[in-house]
Image (cartoon, rainbow, N blue to C red):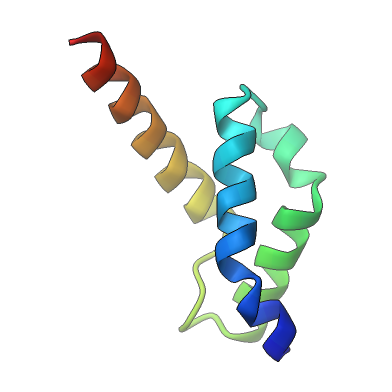
Length: 71
């Protein structure tokens, strides 16, 4: 589990990159990063958010960045 936890930032970064590339939630759900984030959440739910939550959080973050860039 330690190795998986150490890679958590990388899985979050991968999800952010996939969102920037325009991938849908369904597409991202089929990736390794989604699976690993789900494993971490199910094993340690108090320490790690669900991949669904992270998807919506990162998506909102990306949309806000786009709005700031336009303004």
